[in-house]
Image (cartoon, rainbow, N blue to C red):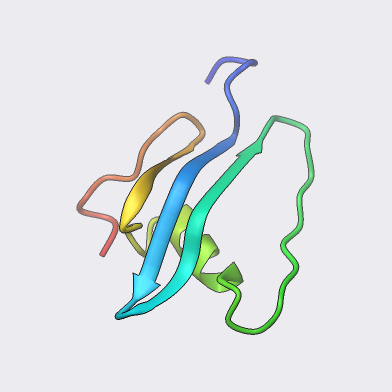
Length: 77
C-alpha cells in the first residue's frame, strides 16, 4: 500500500434487502491516520456497510477497496 492510497475507498455502494434499499450510492474515503465514525437511525445501513467492508456481504453495485485490495467473490456472499 502506498502512502497516498486510501485505507478504505468505497465508491457508489448500493445494497438492498429484497425491495428495500439500504445503501444508496454511498461513497466514503478514509485515508491513513484519519478516524471516522458512523451515526444513524436504526435501519440506516451502518451494520450492512461494516459487513460489506469486511467482505461478509457483496454490494449490489459499486466498488470497495480495503488496504488497496478488492474483496474476492469467494469471501463475499
